[in-house]
Length: 290
Image (cartoon, rainbow, N blue to C red; front, side, top):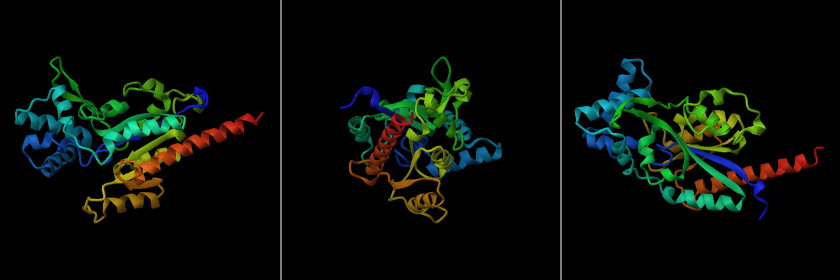
C-alpha cells in the first residue's frame, strides 16, 4: 500500500427522510403516540405555516410541541432521542457504513459521512446508525434548564441545506460559525473540495442542494422507494427522479437499497473510484507541470 499521504478524504452527505429511512421520522413513533393520523398532523402543520406566512420547518416543530403539550407527552431531549430508536431503515442501511468504509480504505480513501436533513437531530442521534456520522446537520430544539424543549434552535429547510455543503467543504463542524463560512479560503486549502463530495437525496426536496453541488463539480444521486405509489402529481418516485436526470439536476438515480451489490451500492463505489482516479490523474499532471 502507498504512503499515508496519498490518501484522500471524501465526504458523503445524506438527506434522511426518504433517503435512509422511509417516510418522515416523526411518523415512526412520535405521531402515533399523539393518536392522530399522520395526514392530519402534516395538514395542520402546513396550515399553520400558511396562516402565519411561516417557514414550514418552524411550523411543524412548533406544532410538535403544541400537540405534545395537549396530549401530555414529555418533550425532554432524551424523549426525542428515544423516539429515534424506533426508526427503521431501507434495506442494507445498518450494515452499509462499516462496509463502505472498509471498501474505501482499500482504495486509499477516507470517508466522512454527514447528515443534512430537515428532520430532527435529536431523533437521528437516537438511531442505530448515528455513530457513523461526523456531523448531523438537522433541525433541532433549544432546551431549558430541565432539558425540556421550549423553542426551535435550528431549522434546516430545502434551500438552506446548501450552506451545509459549504460547511463540509470548509471543514466547519457546527451550525453557528458564520465567520468561517463567509471567509475566503482558496480551493486548495479547503477541507474537502466539492469535487470530493457526494450527495444522496430522495428527489424534489433536495433539488437546490443537488443542483448546487453538481454545478460545483460534486456527485449526486437521487434514490427512491420502488414500492411507493404515484403521488398527487400522478408520478411515481422513480419518474420524479428520472425527471431530475433529464433536467440535469442530478447525475444518477437508484432504488433505496443499500445492500452490497445493489445498483446504489455499485454507483457509490464507482463515484468513489472516479474521485480517486481523478485525484491521481491531477497528481500526474502536477508532476510534469513544472
